[in-house]
Image 1 (tube, rainbow, N blue to C red):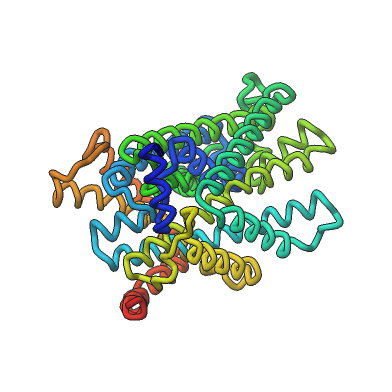
Image 2 (image 1 turned 120 degrees about the vertical axis):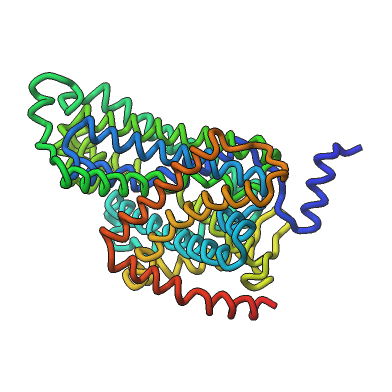
Length: 454
C-alpha cells in the first residue's frame, strides 16, 4: 500500500495543482538567493560616501537589518494564516480587495521580471570580462542564462527547488570564502585600530546634513535587504506553512543580516573607509588588494556565482505572482495552468518572455523599473496594514503563528516603511510623480483585465 503522503502527491500531479513538497531548507535558500545580489557589492560604497565613519556605517546596516526582521515578524503571520502561493499580492487582495491586490501583484510581477533581466545582464557583462572571446555579447549571454533557468524549472518544482538549494549554497560558500580571505590575507583598514584607523575615518556631517546622509544611506541599505519575504511566495507549496514559513523567514533574515555584517566587517578590515567611499564595487577593490592581479577575476567569478541563485529565485517568484493573479481572475485563465510537476508553465513562459524583452530593450525599459521600484516598499506597507486589518476583521481566524510583539513590532515596521516612502518622494520626486501617474492609470487597466479574463 502506498503511503498517504505519496498518494496525495500523485493526486496533485494528476490534477495539475501546485505540489506541497517544500520545506524550511528551500525557504532559507530562496530568501538568500532572492536577497543577496549585486546590492551588497554596490551599497557599501554608497553608504561609506555618505557616512565615512565606521560606527555610523555599521549602525545603518544594523537598522536596515532590524527593519527586515520586524517585517518578517509581521508578514510571517500572513503567510502562515493564508497559505496560498503568490506573495504579497495574496495578502493585499484578501485584506483590502481586488484592486489593492492588482496594484501589488502587477508592480511585483513586472519589477521582478525586470530585475531578472538586470541581474542576467550583469552575469553577461562579467562573463565577457572573464572570457575575452565572449566580450560584447552580454545581451546574448543574459538571454541564454534566463532561458536555461526557466527550462530547469519547467519540469517541476522539485527541480526548481533543488537548483535553488544548490545555487544558494554555492553563494553562501563563496561569501564565506571571501570573508575568510579578507581576515586571513588583509588588514590595515578602518577596524584594525590605532592611528591608521583614525586617519582612515573621514569628517562626519552634523545636524541636518547628517540626518540627510543617514536617510539616504538607509534607503540604499533597505533596498539591499529587499527579498526577505521570499518564502511567502510559496506558502501553498510548503508542507507545513504554519510552522515552516515563520522559521524560513526568521532564519533567512538572520542569515542575511549575518552575511552582510561579516562582508562589511571584512571590507573595513582590508580597506580604509575612505577608499570604500564611492566605490562601485567595494568587494572588487578588496579582492584586488588581497589577490593582486587575480583579484578582478576572482571578484567577477564570485559575482556570477552570487547572481545565479537570484535568477532562479526571480523566475520562481514572478511565476507564482502571475499564476495567483490568473487564478483569481485578474489575468488570463490560461496562465493559471499547472503541469504534472507543479510548475505553472504558462505563467513561467510569459514571465520569461517579459524578462527577455527587458534584456533586449534594457535601456528603453530601465525607466519602467526605476518607477516601479517606488512600489516595492509600498507593497510592504500594504502588507503591514493588512496585518492590522485582519486582526480587527477576523480576530478568531486560526493563526498558526502570531506576530511577536504585535501591535508594536508591526507598527514600527509600518512607520519605517512610511518614512522610507516619504524619503523616496523627497529624494526622487520626478520618478515618484511617474509612479503616482501609473497608479492613477492602473484602475482602468484593472477593469479592462477583469473583463478580458472572464
